[in-house]
Amino acid sequence: MSAQETAAEQVQEASVEHSPVTTGSWEPNIIAFACHYCAFAAADLAGVMRLSYPPNVKIIRLPCTGRLDHIYVLRALERGIDGVFVAG
Amino acid sequence: MIVGEQKPLEEIWSMLKPFKRILVFGCNTCVAVCHTGGNKEAEILASLLRMKARQEGLEMEIKDSGIERQCEHEFYDLMQETLKWPELILSTACGVGVQFTAEKFPDTPVYPALNTTFMGAVDAPGVFSERCQGCGQCILDRTAGICPVSRCAKRLLNGPCGGSTQGKCEINQDTDCAWQLIVDRLKSLNNLDAYETLMPIKDWSKERSGGPRKLIREDLQT
Image (tube, rainbow over all chains, first blue to last red; front, side, top):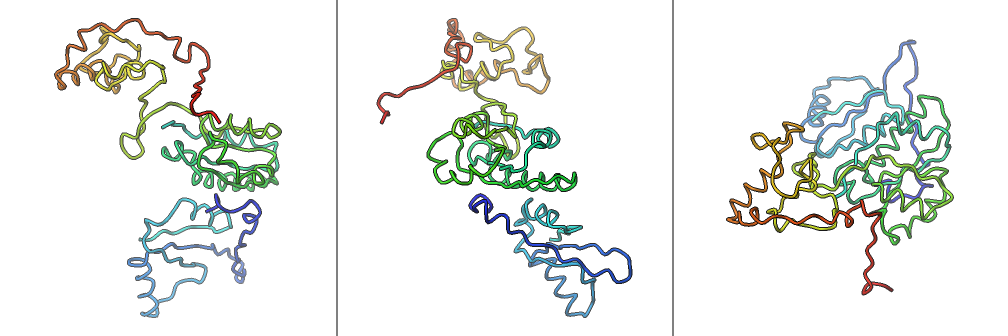
């Protein structure tokens, strides 16, 4: 939590990787917060079934979407993520 | 606890524009209970303000921090270095905390992020209502635990006014008539005699009207 970090540590912010522009059309960077028992399990199953989804969607596993805090969404948006998907 | 509401983001933003190094400083006691100024809310506000600065193309460093309470000296001890960094401290504490912080850091402007409103209780998650105005002369023993000074629009001390209708106050149909509540409660406590006994004229000088107040406990001095 930022409250315990010193001011200096907060300067270290991760930068967002941008997907290479190949076809000239813009691809959004999406983060999906998926809960372990529901949406992440679904993503796992999609993998098992060899279903594919675009590489510009990155999944973060939470134990439950109840664990999602406002600041996670804001931090993602602050670092340049184009959209946040919460599934649970 | 003390309840405050966060100022609209536009209002906060207009206060911050001239500054380059801003610290959003949270208070984790009363205003954290009403989810408007706690350390978590300070972090959220800082994030929103950073995005706002980026949208407007302004070069600003906005960081967040916070302590347990902004109304006691000891809590600031570990924060001396953090609080020397900013040009502006945006305090999300109640008015007390903003002023206390300003007194401790007289060379740095300290601005409020909240509009401090009242002393109240949490009726239900997200619902906070006024209960006490700090009148300095508590009569709750005679009014069955319901305060007519804070909950009666006219602050009457002896029974409802003629405007009390069906248990509601004439100023607003959603506001309960405090005296209706008092009489009902005295009845259920079998203490209607307290209602019959007239309340003497109140000494309003003990309230804020008598000037800013100070309490000194001789037995607790160092």
